[in-house]
Image (tube, rainbow, N blue to C red; front, side, top):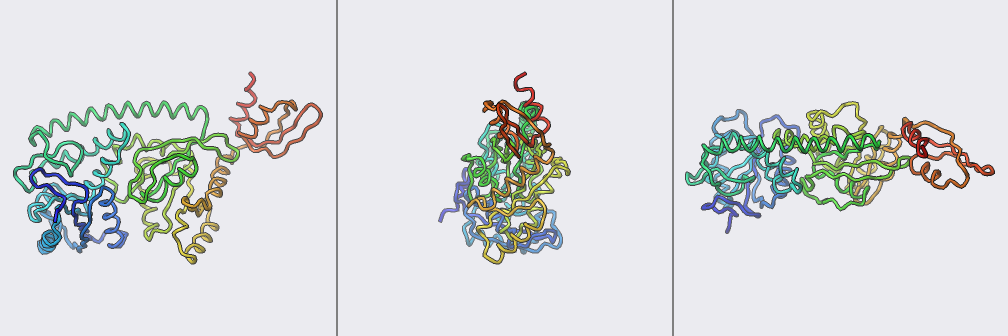
Length: 430
């Protein structure tokens, strides 16, 4: 049976036989089964074949291997029995722990950070995304230039931790990594400046920006596609969408708004990725409104909410930014759970229960967000020539027409507009 691991070349293939290990150090909110399910889902996201899941209680972390020697032997037995070539630890491992575990298990070992970085490396589709992922990879690799369990393997090249040996020796790698990271940071600074100019132009328009945020696989991209008609990748897969996408949409009383779909968050998101993706996440920081899409059918929905809020705080989102919660995946709930969720969402402010898949509740969400954006709008009385169809259409597109009366050659409109739109309207013929 193939393990999916070429020992001579140090490379893994999709379908590599993998064991997921959870060292339970007693500091997690989620239960072990949920944590193992999530890590197995992360492994599945890059095509690994999870053949065994193991959880161990760790009362005192061992500097050499994190877990105890007896637990290491149990994993080694599983590696031999399952013919596994890769062991994924749902924890952060030091370079020394990683090397010692590889020696003891005679299998490649990566930790949670390495696994998530590998997923991002595979998913990045744009030039900016690839720059950000490479910078995060290099930052992570910089402290891990250690010999692995086979003395013939050199430091792996390229992005991947699952790839084969690189062309350079470890000593030279340190300098090359530092130089490459410096170049990447300069390129990303230029990207950030360009993005800032685009954002300034949007703000002068002015069009409100609505950012979708949420835990990975909560359904953000499915909702984004439903609201915009876009074809953003939306699969039942962790980190199915990585690169941000912006589209314009229309809302009641607002002719144009910008909707942003961003990368999904996850518990213990690597600090290297948070730092590297700061430019991308600036769309979230500067948004007028956040819609937090939550998988309300997930057993750890509350813990996921806390993880997302922690990342939002880390990237500097203003706590005063209006936030709405879209309790997604109603279609996956049984009747009793569905009734409970609908009742709770109705009682709470800024909570809307939806199914992005079927469309249920989505229009209510649109109306709720539009009402928040137009809360500062004022009521104006405007008189137009009866034949001014363009002016009438402009008022209907940009505001909420409350009343309309035609008297002879004139038409009177009672309309709710933002002060900025009213100013734009009065200057349209100037």
